[in-house]
Amino acid sequence: MKIKNITWSFMIALTAVGSGFTSCADQPDKFELASGTPTVYYIRPVDVASKDSLVTSASLQSTICLVGDNLKSIKGILFNDQAAVLNTSYITDHTLIVSVPNEIPSVVTDKMYMITASNDTIPYDFQVTISAPSVVSMSNEWAKAGEEVTITGDYFLDYDNYPLEIKVGKDYTLPREAITSIEKTKITFTMPEDMPQHEDIVVSDKYGSTNAPFQYMDNRGMLFDFDTPNSVTNEVLGNSGWHDRIIQSDDTSLSGNYMQIGNTGVTMPANGKWNDEFSFEYWAGNWANPETYASHPRLCDVADFSDWTNKSLKFEMLIPADAGWGAGPMQIIFGSPSQISLGNAGVVDVNGVTLAGCNNTWFHAQNGWGRAIYMPWYSNSSASLYDTGDKWVTVTIPLSDFNLEFDGNSATKSFSSINDFSSLNIFLIKGAYNDKSVLLTEWNVHQLSRLIIFVLCLINKS
Image (cartoon, rainbow, N blue to C red; front, side):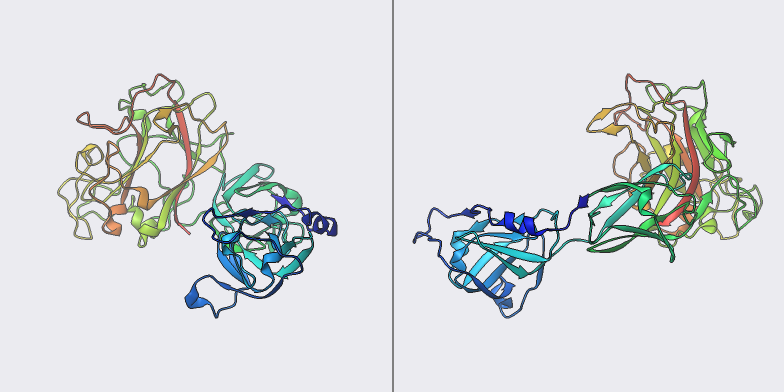
């Protein structure tokens, strides 16, 4: 949102502001607007216990008390360019109680303007404080140069005299000409050729600076990029289970290989019935006794899951425009070797854990184990086709949201140690058992045939 500086002509316009009074019907004495000029000595909190404190700034909707003389001569007050509502019940000759308007100013002068009965404008230094920017997400963290990208959040405020800035790393500022629009909740820009990778991103405006929870081409806590050998076994991680998903590189790629759930010509049925084409497994283990995880390490050894309550799973996703998704929720579930393993059941691993072996009961069973259920096509008890318009988007799911049972009811079991993050399943299915599903699972719409995923990584939530 582009906001202009105040000008003297605007100051003159303030004198035309009409009365903002609202009066109480039970006021015993009729309020009469006084003549003359008000004088404000100081501003204090309304709370009697804090009456000796002085206030020079306040946040939106805060209530303050002006202390001075001839305050009954005030018929209107503006904070910056936003009019406050005056209540004559709270105005005396020496005090005036008023709330700061909740609206964000379009013009910032850091002044309060008192409008008198004779339409004179009396300025007084006073700052309205607003929250620093809130930065939530970026539409595609792996966007190529020249692609349009949107950062979402709140309190993105851009003034001529206090322009919003996006800094990347220590020495790079996103060129102003790259920014195409700024609104309160989103910033849209074109990705520059020289955008630094793997660096902190900071959004700053008049009211503060905020570090984004993401980076450009974020590779922190990398679990899979389907190209790069992991740091534990020096092998590229990918399929490790009963089903081999397509892993390939072509014109669709963001960078190198991607993994595809589903396949051209294979369509999920409307009832969300299980189909092998829609399941990706990574099960830790390599059939050794004792199990050493020499070729398929535990994911908790590949990335740091120690503070899992404050971390998120993130991936890039593309759903072609001709393969809309409208049913079969995506379930994402982690498991320990005692729930699932690429090895023989009953074998003990190097950590003393008895392996469960290969099975499909751990993610289908009615045992209360938590997982995330992702349904971007589902809203307000209705479904519609969802696709990403042949573009890549970034999806972020906090690990604290891995709190649902297979059928969508609340899970009764959750993570208790990093060992619970050894293996991973991503699959699409109706998500119900024993007819107790809380998820609507059947739609008369076309089902997706391809859902493409690139880069699964683990990041801090903030």
